[in-house]
Length: 432
Image (cartoon, rainbow, N blue to C red; front, side, top):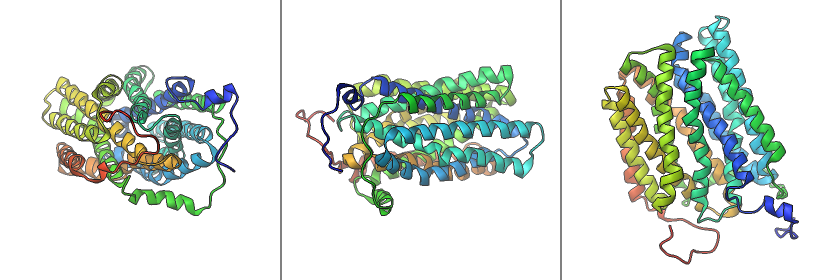
């Protein structure tokens, strides 16, 4: 099939026009908002739930670890598949799988609360329910990112991707608050099923209403998927992926231990623990959202600077959490961490996207999404196990050490300078 296409009619041209803030963007924004809200709800209720289910504290991390492992291997495949068959069907599939995963997780929790499933059987069932998200739900993010990349220039892509990923932050901001209210009213399981229902509606909306008229590309040889994985060693991407992996480890550690840390530091349990954990996640997400929507567009920083400042602020926020004596101090720590994440993640994601050419966007997005989940495979060891064996501050001290190393790496790595753009150069040399 030739690369050139005949002129599209007006309606079709609009569907492939620059993304801006039109209906395509809003659809993707709402759908990713649902995922962000669901994940933050699950993380808020998981610590008190595992204690109610008589599981070890470290099981909070391990429940998510298999899903994260599957996410790492599946995301590049879904990104490449979206290059071939289109972004819309892959994104819709991911959201539908997310709905199934959340519904299954809620059902298993209910069985555990009623002592139908106990012990190792309950633990394995929770892991398997969550793993549906890792294997198939991982399709949504690379497809959505590649959809944005298809419709933006390389010089506006960082800001546009930050706007899209702010959907996660918005979901993370309001998800825990809704979760805390619903948990106090109808129990800890109902919010999980609510997200499953919303995710099913989002999948239908993407399939039915997201415009995409770009025809599928020519079928590619099977070996090309392996070639896309070879991008991991490409000098254009390797430094961004290494930074993203470290960021993912830190995110996994801090998220997985925050609920346990809050309950133990403040001496609370059960629904009260879920409420205070939700408050922390909400502050974190609001700070991240404000950073991406209000601060980031005014900073005029390139990816490298965003990565350095983001890691440094994250280290400061985790340090504040270690010494925090009260709920107020814990919320300040979460706000600083949200500010740092709001800079670090767009820097890493935008830099990786700009570093590759247009025909590599799907593969690169898949690797970026895989990297975002890779750290959660290892974070249970650094987070939950270290928390149980060596004390509540040890996982956070390890996270601070990693973040300091990330800051130095972002400032010093030569590979972060090797940015290749597929398009015209800007006329203004001051434009990052």
